[in-house]
Image (cartoon, rainbow, N blue to C red):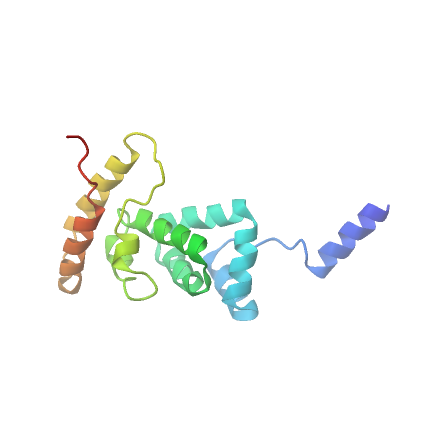
Length: 160
């Protein structure tokens, strides 16, 4: 009975409230509680944070906006996770991703191979998809950035 009452008390106090799951919910929570608090709470739950990173990978405008809202409050490890999620969005949304350069994200951080010890073929497949997406950019103000990004996405040649 004591455990039940404690659980009811915690739920009533908001301690077990569900984390925000949509971009709109995250934005509202940032306005209400501040970005630092929201990011700390999101990152404390690894499953929730990984899910958010996967959504950012999709490259949708709403999730890329979440990345830009969270980035200023990130420490080095979380910043790298956000950079990699945005980089993985590059093949899906090259214009939107490149538009983030100078708005919380740096070219060298999002135009890279966004994997740590990937399975064989993963980085190579990413490179092909990212280069194809970058070559499709027609917006004059992004062409030079796309060219520079493509140079950085290319994997180093291995072997003798």
